[in-house]
Each structure stands twice: as C-alpha cells, then as structure tokens.
Image (cartoon, rainbow, N blue to C red; front, side, top):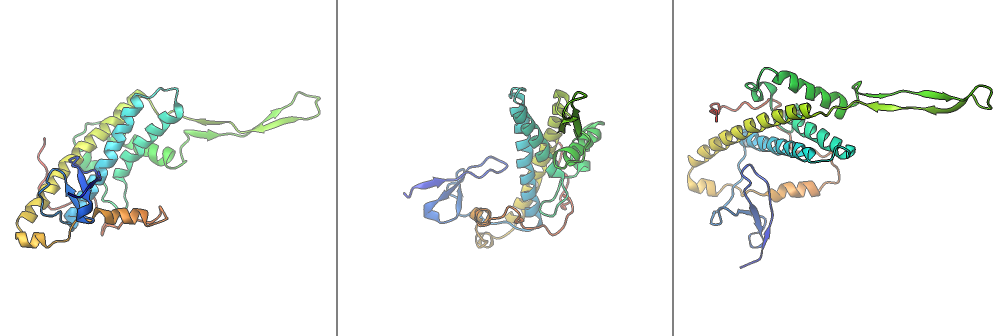
Length: 256
C-alpha cells in the first residue's frame, strides 16, 4: 500500500481529510475510507455554505482568543492587547459588507439575544471601526509640549516632547459581553450550516448516481495553489455575484 500523507483541513464537523499519494490531488475522508469520490458542489447554496464556514472559523478563533486572554498574566500588556484586539476584529469581520463573502446581519443573528444586544454590538463595532482598525477615536491622544529650562540659563527650552495616551478598552465586563456576542453568533452560524448543508444534500440525493459520479472532483489544492502562487496579499478571492446577506430560499432553522 502506498504511503499516505496526512493533511488536515478544518470543516464544521472537525472531519479529517487525507491526501493520498496514490490518488493524485484528490482528497479522501478518513471517516469514509470506501467513498467513491468527493465531488465539487457549486452554485448559490454552496457559496452560502462556504461563507458560513468561513464565518465559523473566524468566530471560533475569536472565542479562542478570549480563552487564552483569561489565562494570560495582565502584566503582559502587549500580549493581552493583541488577544483582545484580535478577538474583536475576527468577530467584527463576520458582519462586514464586502463582495468576497456574504456577511452576517445584526438583525438576524442577534434577534433573540436580549434587550441590550444592540448596544453591546454597537459598542464593539465602534471600537473596531474607530480605534482598532482605524485611528479615529479620542481614546488615543498625543500632545506636544516643550520643557522650559530654569530662568537665566543658556537655553530657554530643554526639549520638545510629545506624550501619548491610549484609553483602556478591556475589562472583565467587556470581555463577558464580547464572549456573549461571539457565542450567540456561533450558535446561529452552526444552525444555518446544518440547514444549508441538509438542503444541498437533499438536492444531490434527487439526482441520478451516474450524474453525481460524473461531477468534477473536489480539489482543495486549487485553493492552496492560489495562495502560494501569488506574491501579493492584495490578490482577491473570487467575488460573489451580489452583496446581499444570507437569504436563501429555505425554511428557517428550528430552535435547538
């Protein structure tokens, strides 16, 4: 038997994928060793599911940042700030309005999150937009002054100085609020992933097996080649056809 090279690709189930040298660039699924093929699924529903899974990765990362932050010595200010800011950024970009990924909406995600959810959401979006990602907030200040020498000396001005100050945005209460936002969003995303995946599965089940088998194989290395084949981080992922938020024609997910 040819030696197998294990490769791990995250998905919503934590399923392990392996790339086999005896199988070219096709990936196998460790849980389904006898699978005939992994086919590529395309179309609006597939785009939606892919975007939901990217949101899931961001939200899981944000949650892990807060977990590590709780275990970090507060004296390590740089590390604490890095974890805090990263958690906010990864949560926030799930709600961004760009054409590379269908964004989550505040209205749908936090509809049942409680009466203060809107205020907490606005606080962290403002923190991200005006203080972390951009320098617009009054939380960061710099002033210019001059140190005057004692009267009668050779110099009147000893030195021109510019002291800076940055407001503290972290507190245990704020961290608990962000953790709640992340948790609610992640549970919403997980439900929608299951809903859309089941919908796609039902559509595929209705097709003849020969038609399914003739569909192109899933090639995860295509994404890898795109990543490592470009020298510019400015190269964009494939754009979506529209900027609308999630709105597929599928019944709403039941509460769990």
